[in-house]
Image 1: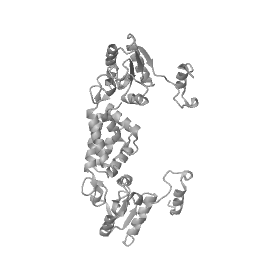
Image 2 (image 1 turned 45 degrees about the vertical axis):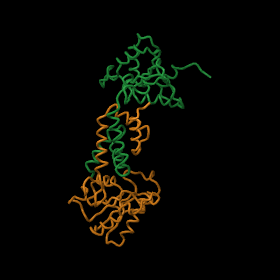
Image 3 (image 1 turned 90 degrees about the vertical axis):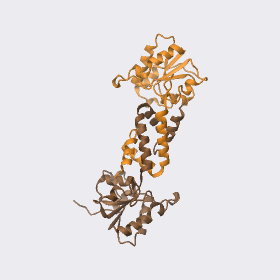
Length: 199
Length: 199
């Protein structure tokens, strides 16, 4: 017998990715039993983020301001543009601290079955941005999935008349990976994408 | 580069059980990208539950009212009292639809190292309740853990002068369990707690 408020909370938790009914129940009871303050803080953070987070007007990444921190930064290389699928990808690349250019975030990938076309990914905005900023190189860093490859291909086609070097992130064996356990497709890419040995 | 609001949301999500930094990030980005409405609904449900859910004055289970639905029900058997550790246990037992008595929820178990003593579990309230309602049988349904057993033992000691049958839920092989894979302790309990074969 659960009270209506608890039932509603459990149901609300299941909107989170990877959270089924059992986990949602565990979360609800945990907060009620041991951390009501944390629950209220989570509610505040949710409302603030859901209402306050918008998209950067240049790169479409999440930000609370007109321009995101990266687009606004003077320290970033304007001649290098990295096209990614989602803000989480920007965060992942930024975590490596090895990229000093700027980004463009598609917020998805081409997926005709789901009705996601070029206009939903802001590809017209990307085209304008490339025309105006004239970067020297564009790195197509969409996912190594069928949809990601298709999206990269579409963008490359769209920009083929621009004077810009287009590159695609390397596919291959992950660091620490053992060939024995790598799938055939990856291994094929890893072989065909082989590079001169550097000591 | 994450905006302050997103950082705060990710941090707030880590207060949930089983949610680390990576899952929290996934949840935050998921809501921002695809389900802002769900995020706001979750916030509303959280605030409503954190502020509205109290304890039943009779059994200490979660409820929004003075008495919970079970304590308030005329259909339940007042002569059978089941003592459990948490509201989730009540829900689990209720889901079996095989128990028609009432409950008492300890909201924890004895744990001297964490400073949780008899007064934190409302054992004085349980004693009063047993004195007043005089149930015929009390089922000690605390967990089959060291703390749960100790708590059951403590309650049994406390009530030894009351005229009431005390019982403990059975320990043994779970339904569908194979003896080969059951731990020794459980198997031992299962043997010593054997019952006459019923066809």
